[in-house]
Image (cartoon, rainbow, N blue to C red; front, side, top):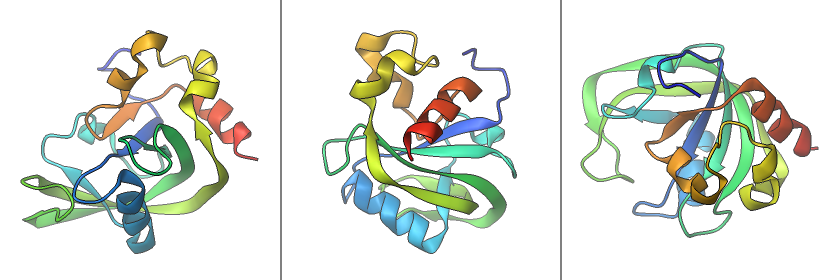
Length: 150
């Protein structure tokens, strides 16, 4: 998927920091406040109404799994730049709030489904596709993940 093409489907990635990626994810969705950093790739693609699937990277609980989805409800501009306590030295540009948040009953392990995820062209190096906090996903792969969540 070319980087300069806008999409209605995004992956928000939670990776290990001062806590596990899963703990950080839980904190963010409980507060309904997901930080977008000043150097996050795709931050210009984050807009109200876009569909998001959540992925846990890192080495902790639920690692390398899709665990939920949502729609972007609103974007809260962070005029007074703050620093995220879970990710040292990262300045927060804005926060995202979600609606229609669904946490999957069971996590969807990427290795079990990688052949059906078209946004990952190099299946052996799939981890490269989950760097930077946000990445694009095509509609077909998004719907595949969503349908596996039932």
